[in-house]
Image (cartoon, rainbow, N blue to C red; front, side, top):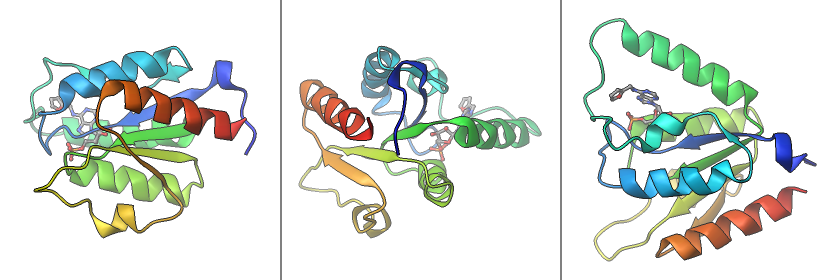
Length: 146
Ligand code: 6K6
């Protein structure tokens, strides 16, 4: 797929109710992605976003809006270190929509990534250990799209 990078819409996915331990990393990745294209989901890196979410009907609005954004995105970048049902769901939809997907993952001794991500060759999975490595994974991935 050939993509015009400067006008690219990027959907960033990261855990919210799955846990906010990596929120700071999400914020930094989102800032970096912002130099490449328009990040539709900047709120995922918001340090003040709790992991409980709002009450009642708001969840339906979130789901509807996020599906629309996924459909309009050129590329999906997901940070998959903190397991999240929502991120897994978004990855499945992105795959069905045939969007290019980059998954970033920090390996550790006590965790194993789901086989549904690790074993899926439709997704580009890159392991990283620090932000510098994450940035170079992002650069390589976007270079592969043009
Ligand atoms: C406010 C406070 C906490 O959560 C909110 C509002 N919730 C969400 N807002 C926007 N996107 C959301 C929200 N909850 C989940 N998502 C989407 O699912 C995001 O695009 C994330 O990539 C993913 C996170 O899923 P969970 O299962 O970890 O919440």
